[in-house]
Image (cartoon, protein in one colour):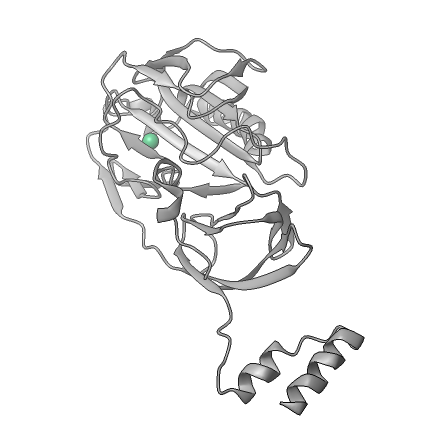
Length: 287
Ligand SMILES: [Zn+2]
């Protein structure tokens, strides 16, 4: 008792934390906080957050909750995440990233042959388009404040179950190509495509691979992507609201048929958009 009192006094005088010492004395131990997520998933640390960081990168919380999006290609292993609370406390936890094997998707007898053996002028075109898109979707140290909350809105009035092909490793007529960066939803030709949240259009353009494409900035480093549209009805810098019609489902670009490709980038990480459509309390939590 006397020891504890002395230590409390020491804490007051020197501002030394004695929690661990006290708990060890009482036979208790404080388990370090942690969360385990697969590649392409998101971790969540809820409540009273001012600032969130993952290794050397940092960003703001969304309505007081820190989210840690894990890129589909992030190396499996242990990472340090932290948060600064509104009380000024700095807390750290371990983010365990686990391997998520990509499903194999082999597209045979691909109908649009220009996407199999890509002509030099189309390769040059695609490279030019990538040079425009890559800076838009990469991590930035400063971003606009969040104008969305989770879950985000569905990108179609009636959204069927996704095709489960987020992150798929794909071959087109036997030729390996880049991994699939979004989720494909079997929404019918000409159905309206809706903005997942309030935001600002970053890009609305016709690109070689993604066809008619729209990119929307929702603040807090969250970008949503809608590809292969029949047409789009928004232009860059236009402000959009959650659920606003931005275009129609189509089959432009490298596709086998009409569908909606929906993708998200958050703080530069390519993640499964399905995580933003579920109740946030179902996202893996730091505890
Ligand atoms: Zn797709």
